[in-house]
Length: 388
Image 1: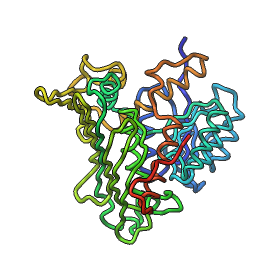
Image 2 (image 1 turned 30 degrees about the vertical axis):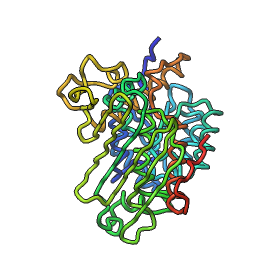
Image 3 (image 1 turned 120 degrees about the horizontal axis):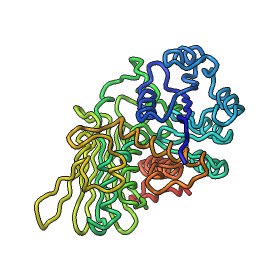
Image 4 (image 1 turned 90 degrees about the horizontal axis):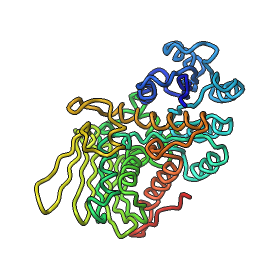
């Protein structure tokens, strides 16, 4: 049985001048199975209404606050109200908004990091469990086909037992004081009141942690973190972290926002007893597999030899590049397929459920807070905080 209509989407945040809101909208609408019908697109009610008009959202579904949106939408009959809300606000607002919509029975897709604090993350885990709604976290790098292929190859033992994980994400965009020039992204990300206890590790370092866990399935057990900031900023702009994982694997995580000349140079290497994998976000359609016994093998997106999850995440034939927004769209595609299954009373399969959840969000906050506390501690090895 198929749902004979598009899913109805609402959005909180992501109005005029917002970067990530447009990415989420493009991703959600890419496959033609979702329509954006409601929004509370700014904390400024006038800006929210103007942003809604720009996106052709009707006046009656344009809300001045997220509270009004949750209240009014939840009173509408199923099939008329929004099926899910996308939360694309600064970090400090994620928890109250997710809590409000989940308790109103509305499914939630939220940008990362999931909450402002680890305690909020733990609370949200319980709220989502009790509400029964679908919750997805947009760690979009999990949506790349070749990341899914890497995960498949690790999980099926092709590289053997994991010995070492090296993951890095250097950027150069905060080399100068953009926040003093009114640059919106820099202004809130460098502000502890809106960003949380960390900037760099909370923003891009959390992607590194999530990518390492998604591909390998291994949990971090302890770490030794060295965080740094420049320009007298109150939050970190750089982090270098030694990691111990379960099953005696070790690792290195490096994230930076003042590495001159770097754009979004996310890269992961996973070394096992039988071989190694390497994936590079700026060349996302390629996955390298290496061993000591022969030449390196190059896997390419779109080919029939890839696993089912990689095939499901592929829209174009080989040689036609797919990248950032398509990866975002894959997270949305799986999450919204899970929402459709819920509406129809069906049980989604493993491929549909392949998206980051509230537990991944809690793990991310545990990592962020552990890294900050490790940096402040005299201990060489600092235990990863519990998240469930």
